[in-house]
Image 1: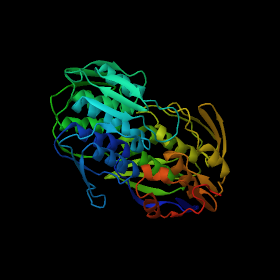
Image 2: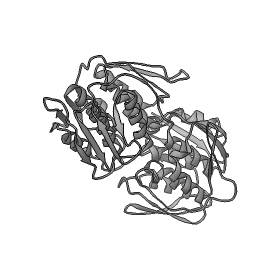
Image 3: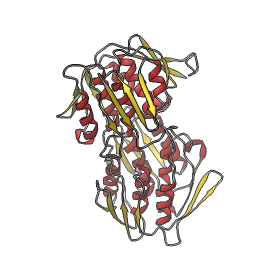
Image 4: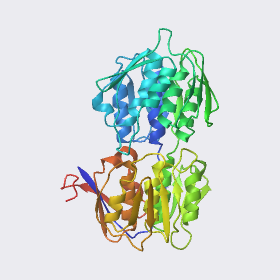
Length: 431
């Protein structure tokens, strides 16, 4: 096991490349199961979750070719025949996004058996919406010994009107893929609008799907008999871009985020502006800097897109720990996404949690300390806190980081951070 060590105090200045979005790449790769033609994706990040899904796809019979060292970071997937219809527990347990193979397998093959998924322990994230939308399309669903066993009717999935009772990115993506090959018309209401959903829908259209209302909360899909292969570039990761912007803000730095798209960061940009961090669109990316003065305490509430993203909540809290004044962080997406708070307290932060709200009083200085990564976004928050803390911070259990951030240390080193990865003699226990 490894850990990351950060020595705080350096301003971040320079260029930081933003990788392709993990949360866009995963459903795109799953969509390759919908066709028997080759599919090529570029800008695919080299991450643990990508490698997990690749192994899952290969288990279904996909032939995958990927060169993460190439400039294009291209991955070609070809599944001429689906040879296995079971997504096994040993892979699915490590990553929630594995449930995304359910819709493609069910739509193309008429049946699928998918283990109930795992992933970050950030609260209850049931798969019931994934299952209920498949049932609305005519599938029979049973749960057997920890597996979802799904079977389409004899004529294949049937178009239907489905209203999501809560906004769900993953369930919207699964529904889009399944409906693309269903018979008739499907209308998805209260659908997720995230850029990653838009990216998937645009790729499906390139493959021959007929989808109206992309980017809105109501999408209409006319099912087609088959889909073709295509080439598609994975959209830049707005969460990584937001994380790096906050790193610039917390260190009073000036960073150009190459490939970032400001239109995907509007809610975060608005909150950061109130806190004293400016995001400005420039050719080829976004500039993030803190023009003057101390950070200012700012309240946020997480909401589905285009609201403030839950995946940036922990990082924003890190900023507020050293801001002037108080702030309130309201988490309305996941009920257990404050697990980073005890670790920030170890570094001298002043935070009180009541239910789904965290009350933060800014302090003059955080102190370096050994801390634990409890989930993907919490782990990078510890890195941000370490960048501004006095002394050394060691972040243990960084396997969470490797699921979602590509070459994190190299990117931070490139803008002046004192950060390194090393073997962890404590085996992740921090003692």
